[in-house]
Structure formats: C-alpha cells, structure tokens
Length: 136
Image (cartoon, rainbow, N blue to C red; front, side, top):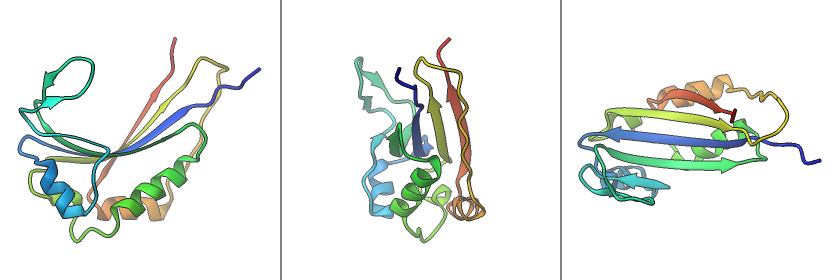
C-alpha cells in the first residue's frame, strides 16, 4: 500500500493594483514562476482579465522538507537592497506555505521555521501565510 504524502508548495507573492511584474523582475534580478499585470489576461483554461498585478516565485514538492524549500526560496531572492514590500507597486508581500493531502491515511505534517528564517523573512518585509487542504 502506498502511503500518501502531502504536496507542499512554497510561494513568495508580491501583489498590487499598480504592480508591474517587469519592474519587480528587474529589481530582484530573477524571473517569476508566474506573473500578471492588472488588465492583462490570466493564463488557464479560461481567459480572465486580471484585477491585480502579481509576481510569484514558487517551489513545490511531495518529498522535500518544508524548511529546505523555504531556505531555497530565500536563497533565490538573495539579499534584496530593500524590503520586498517597498518595491514600486507592491501593496501585499507574503510567503505562502500551502500543504495539500492526497486521499490517504489521516497523517500529520510537522515543520519548523527557524529564528533565522523568521528574521530573514522579516528583513524581506514578508508576512507568512499557512494553508492546509485535505479532501473530504
């Protein structure tokens, strides 16, 4: 019997009405995993006009520790000259830790954000959001 493992997605989101993803990419020197500009079309099965600008950098895995993924994302961002929430057009800046379970046994997930993680995320001007989803 295969034991179900959670899918974990760690994403850094920068959002704002006037956010231009090109400016964010140029400021950080890194391309996003996903982005959209307000008024542009979002990608997906149906075309929808984006109501807000968004720049996201994402990492997903069903086998890596959460702590390791957070560290990788922090390394990818590097040492920003200023907090990310102060980049032109950014109204909301946060790290999202999303955990989704497959069908399977009722298991728990444990992870730790270290003091160093918290300090670095704070220096980057990021709030942290935790989301957990399990099918009925």
